[in-house]
Length: 218
Image (cartoon, rainbow, N blue to C red; front, side, top):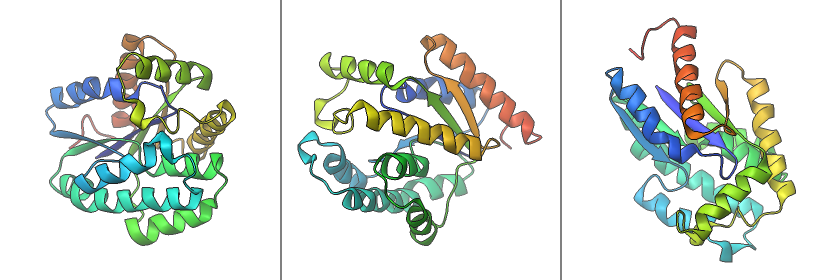
């Protein structure tokens, strides 16, 4: 099973990975975690370019193609091998992030993005996507608090430096995707405390397993 985590900056996706892994493994299933960009050795180098705040003049089309390059390598060397081995793959961001950041927010052609994904990534789609929904003002405040207190590196703050209107477009893009695919998306209220978010995630996972007629991930 392929599960992705999506949301704006500061939504708390990464901090919940450990809880999700514990929930899935407690049910007896092998689970691996990864992320985009940077889920491979080559991807880590691409990540440095994409998230470095010094690259503020990176063209939106170049940005898109760098994300696609990262994803191709990621799918072929990490995601597909683990899925084929029967493991649950938890990925922090995937193709939905490209649609909202480079599509809804940057204004690039979303049809082109779908074509690229189909042609070079095989059209791989998550089985389940947990969308961490949060007011962009709150998310950015959280993100900058982490950066300023050493919880995150300021070498990866290019998107945090975008204006609020950019992040509002990202949020609306995610919500639009969730409306279009309600069977795949589960919206998590990321404005709750950490325990509340963890409980909402566990409920969403349990609800999904029931919806597909399984007690687990077999």
